[in-house]
Image (tube, rainbow, N blue to C red; front, side):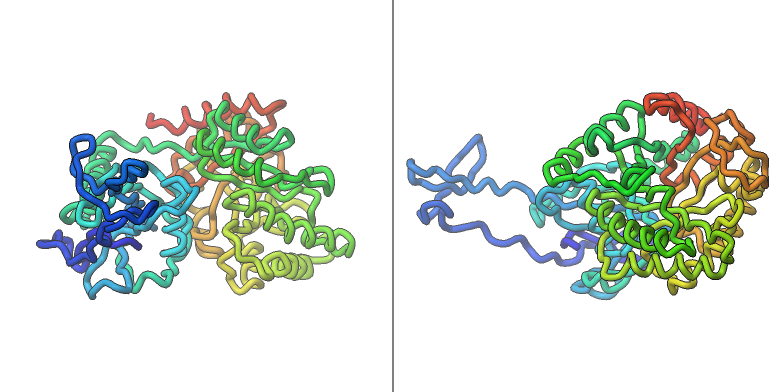
Length: 476
């Protein structure tokens, strides 16, 4: 957390005067290239310290240092934090310095994760603000945080401030707060119109960079990929050069969220030892592979107990997940997918997902992915706001809404409560356009990454599917 200016957060009043801030280090006295004593001379109309040696002419430009900052919203409140070096009562935004090779968006997501333990999602750039006392330029973002707050070593305490009680303080990050509050007021007056983080399942058969190009073409801001061939055990090799190229293409495409999906052939609940061994190998290897690909989530089906019983199947799922997480310290999070509850499938109810999480002692590295088709087929009527609220209350009681990290957005060919997993294109199933509209405009679902898995013949068709969803999400 950098020494940007902050305010007292115990009351909504802005700070009357700035807290003392450690000044920047003194300028250099000698040229770092030839060790000649530096002298002041006019360069481009400004006095600069420069090397007087005409064969060197090194210049100390003293450019401002970039700092990233987050107006961090979590569960309806803004989080202000106190650095361990700050006095009691002094709180500020989450801030930090960029690291080599990362974009400002990547930097603030990393800082949020390191300092608060939350998974951050950048909503928008608020602005850039000079902080002359420290010779810094603050790049401020509005960030939504998900998960449970767990303070890092740099922070001593935090406060949750309702936005209506938040007031800016003088200069630097306080100006970012001022502008965010103004934007928030303006957006509220204009009505709810925040863009969905919406995408689809795409192939990496032609490489990760090509996949991001496809995402850009269809208008996707999140993308789902298989970790390996969905029909077999092969996984294509991805070298560091491809990863670097993919990172550039991802930034250009504006893809916020990447979801890696374990192949459907993997069954962590299987009573058959060869199938179970394969599941344990794939889940362990592909979690680490997905983390290397910079995916945020790794989704997998809990599997089928194959008539051996839910309790025995659940025990095998727990053991498989424990094996995958053993010695794992990556950032990608495992997500159990909620199922439709057909046959001997596990995960068709909130209680079955809860049993798995309980077996893992609530490990924070494991969450839940829901699917609108699966929910409808399992008996949750998502065609009304009341129906969605009843569904979410049940999941909140069983697993906690903070565990739900993404939604597969699909219409459903099957009837309500049929327990048949049959995806349909948007508006062409039993949910219909009104059901999809209710889902994507619900205040909880609308904040999640939404990924289409609708039955298109080829990936370009997702452009029309995504456009249809965005149309349904528009205020009527």
